[in-house]
Length: 419
Image 1 (cartoon, rainbow, N blue to C red):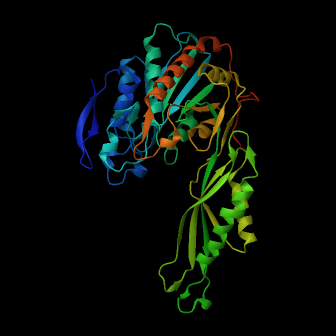
Image 2 (spheres, rainbow, N blue to C red):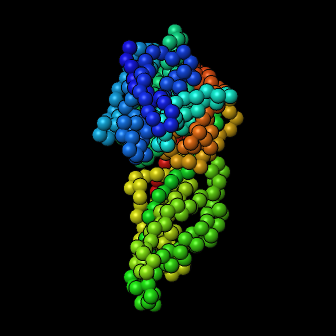
Image 3 (tube, rainbow, N blue to C red):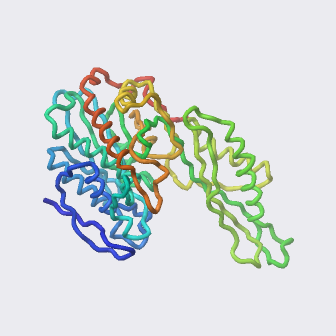
């Protein structure tokens, strides 16, 4: 059997042991193994390049899939980073396809202790436990269970896609969307407290810059202070503009928001600064485009008499998601997971990107987003088990759903908020 290096140890001292790729006896055992295999997004790995990248986790899951007789494929994304495709084919003629799509990467860690799984008082601790290796474990274990059974969906193909780079630039979902096969529903794994999410906000990261004129600090009257100009704009954005955004509401998402997260200006105390820049996080609603938001920011700047330059820091579409909850596949998923209604999410994720490829998307998974990215990240064992049971129940229900075939020409598929 294949063996994979995992991190153990205390504090900042890292030791290496090995995890054998044998079929896990429970979803808890699978998640414990996933936590112990580092898959930190390279953007956040710092000096620990040996912990960076999703390849080790991908290889571990790939070997488990092969042992269960599942079809596997690696899709090149960027450099050595690859999405993992695992397919459970339909027993008979395929009439529909369901996609399970969690991401494999995590944010960074402060020390190696965060890469050791710890089970305590009904909680499983470790980096990625909640965001989003818990969803990986629930979805993948459900797929393994379904492959083991003699009775499984007759006309439904189930495709598990382990995506790379969600935590940074969503390169994995963008590459997948470019090659995405026709599908009736994609379930994007994120911690939603087992609620079915059909809408999430978009997320524009923008740099705004003001220009001034440098002068000696003893003669500020000879210069033009770019920091002062920016201060006027920041005050306007965080007060009048933020209040204006509260008047625009979405039934699932509430209102749009803006946050000034970074400000940099000037070189030294005895110089009038000739430049200042801020980075803003603008969470958008369905129907709002990047050009709309940039126009609004310029309008706010004009009202306070400030000239600005705006740069899109992401350089890639990050629109909001809004999926039609009346679609038959969405309705069946809601029923099989024991829900009576759908919800929205403030965070941005891979769902909107895959949705732009024409696949109806919902977001679903165990855990609470409040625990994501925290030092003591954890997931409730009860939530993990229940999420796995509900996913398995949904996947097992699929034979009768094969009578429905979603068509790309349908007028009721998914809103991708294009303008």
